[in-house]
Picture 1 (cartoon, rainbow, N blue to C red):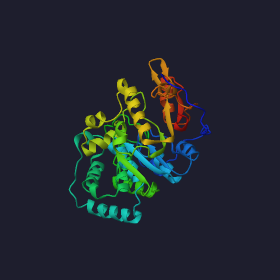
Picture 2: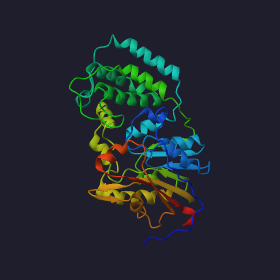
Picture 3: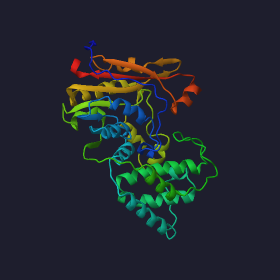
Length: 355
C-alpha cells in the first residue's frame, strides 16, 4: 500500500525550453542515445542547494553530473555501459590540449609509412577502406590516449561513419549503409573533436563508477548522498547498444550480447528492476535527500502509458511532485510525427524529509 507524503518545501520552477541542444559544449563529444539536455539539467540543478553530494545512478555520458559539478556539487555517476562510462570520465579529465594535438600530428606523419590496416569485419562495412585504416592506426595506440582523447576518438568514429555514408544519416540515427563509401580524413575529424569539445572539469570531486544501479549500496556508502537526479533507462526498453554506439562496440570487438545482459533493457522485467534500483537509492541517500527522476510517456500499440503514473508505483511512498510537460525541439519530434504521438515528459520528485 502506498502512503502519501507530507507537503515538500522543495518546489522547483519548471520552464518550457525554447531549445535543448548545445552542440558546442563538451556534451557534443559523442551522440549517446537518450541523453538528457544539458540546458534542462542545469535548470533543475541550479535550484538545488549548492553544497552536498549528487548521484546519477544512470549517468550515461555524464550530462547531469557534469552540470552539477559546474555548480559546485560533489558528484557520483554510475552506469553499466562501458562506452557511457568512458564519455563521462572524459568530462572530468583535464588534458594538455597542445600535447594532445602534437601527439596526433606525429601519428599523421607516421601514417604514410604504415601498412594499411583494417577493422573487424562487423565494423569495416561502415567506412571507406582508407578511413577504416586510419581508425585502426589510432586504435593500436588507444591505451596510450588520455581519458579525454579516448572520448574524442569515439566521437570522431561516429562523425566518420556518417561522412563515409555521404551524410545521409542524422547526427543521432544511422541509416542505410551506402554501397559506395566516401573517404573521410579520420585524423582531421579526430583533431577537430579534440579542439571543439574541450571544456573539462577537475575530477577531484567527481566519482565515475562502472557498475549496476541495482547494486548501488555495494559501491556507495549508505546515507552519503544528498541528491539524486537522473533520467533512468527509457521504460520502453530503449537499446543503448544500438546505432552509433554499436559501431564503436564492433570496432573494439565487444560482445554486445554480454553488455546488454547487464543493462536494464528488458521491458517485462523493467518494473521489478526499477523497484530494486529505487530501494538501493533509499539506502544510499540521507534522510533529507531529494530524489528527482525525469521520465517520459511510452507508446504501447495505441495505448500511451504515462511515465508519471508508472514510476509513482515503484516505491511504497508516493512522489511529492509530478510535473508534466511536452517534448519540444528534440530529435524525438521526428519519430513523434511518424508515430502520430505527442509525447510528454514527467519530472517526478520524492523528498525524503517528508517521509
